[in-house]
Image (tube, rainbow, N blue to C red; front, side):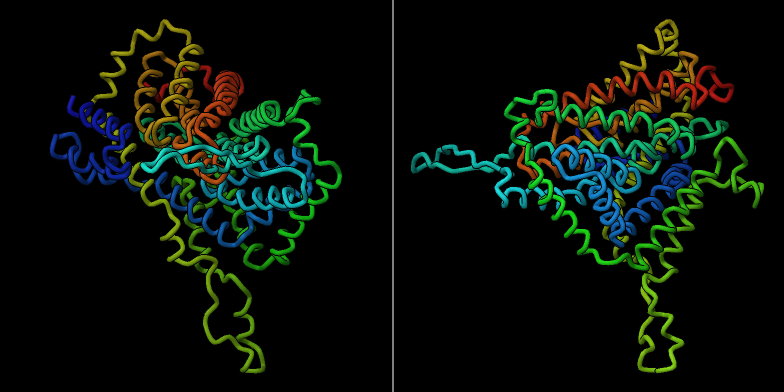
Length: 511
């Protein structure tokens, strides 16, 4: 019961944000030893493990990619290839943002796309091919009387572009283990709660998650087209508003081409970062691919996890130079030789400024909940209390759990929600005699699906502030993505997910 009190206290604090989220994550270090649940050493060990190091490594990789400008080059090149009508631009932006969000933070992916969106829309407006904003006049009451003022209001076309950036970044985060904090929360909790399981690899995760991610992305794009751009309604006002004609497409293409040329030729920094990024993805993928021996088995009999590859590449980012100036050290003319060392691909100052250090404490707090629940036998108590669930259809439970996770994550931090519900879901699965991932994995995915409120996730807040989208309009737009993600997650995981993760039988290691 003492552990249950700590878990309940942390859940309440995370939900209400009485304390900052990372500070709430530190509570077990104080209460666990004093309440006789776990020693200080064992509790502190929960905050630094393989999953935490993988998070740090993946964040460093993302920061290095942003610093090199490689992500911007990739985005503009893909958009150029797809085309520059409003429909094609939004489709290109959607899938480019999703791809970037698979590897860098959702917030960074959204922020990166906004200058591209704003430049294209402003140029079309300058050419008389549509307005980005309209001025909405209103009257405000002051002590001296009513004052008339105006407020920027986005057009329906503008709303689509900014909603695309926000929604695509949230959906893209589910594509890889490193895409968002909730994925790593699941990995860390699952492998700590079930140490005898084979764990969750990047290979199996992507094999399942990428197909539904693409399907959700396409259906969400269709929803936005139908709602705001007149798809299937050729004679509507919305359809007329996005008809910019061949001239408008040329204007948009010229803007994209100009921004691409401003980047200049590809640099040594960008190409080196691209090679190392590809290398770490391959190391993650082939660590335990399932269809052949993983690369660690050729080197050692010890267990090698994904944090090893991430940390190796992190070190190389500091070792390898960001330019080739050092080669001039051998120049015959002393005047041409460099006078200072070549800079690395990243500096510690930049890592220190851009790293989400607070999330490490939130993750650690979740792992401490898992360890405390097991040590104090709270997990067993919950398992016995939930034994009656055996008679309920697992598919119905799956739908309810996903709907609950999507609803709660609209109101508080995604990672905090995952930390709260995953321990309960693990015990539910054991009580129902079903594979623990059957409920835990789709629930963790749904913790990323916040589409209704600007405060639900940072990408939503960024898009709302940039485009002046009203909360009511944002809530209406989010109806479609919420329904789409709920149905697609439930249907795909109960079919394709069951096959990929072999969920048809209750595993011995879960007992």
